[in-house]
Image (tube, rainbow, N blue to C red; front, top):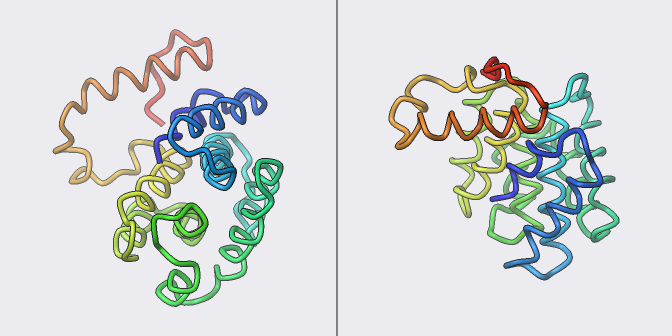
Length: 190
């Protein structure tokens, strides 16, 4: 769940994104499935941040699974299951996917929560938070992907107003954006 900044930083350099996500994961999670999960989430953030991402019919989830497959092929069927369940009742779908702390459950559940309502930050995060299981991890991942797609202004004010250190976080985010894009502009309010 801590890999989101890698997706933001390297959204234009996918080789660096994959390498950075894998290196950040291996510090605490040496299992190849965990590394593949980190790569999947970083790539999902990068895709959501990029223009022209295709969220129709689960194409997004297929792209994420394909990108992470070379790290561990076992993530592909787990993410594919999330893709197949998009039309199902969310509670039933999340029960089938599982919402535990295992990467094989948490990553597909987070991707499902996002793909189920990509244009709705609040709906995505609330679905993840109410899923049961490892909700902080699932919510953090789903929320990061949704935030990358929809921008900070999509977060309800009641979610933003009481974040400790919000001004500092905003400044760090702007520095990261400027470094990534080479822009001196402060118009990164997306």
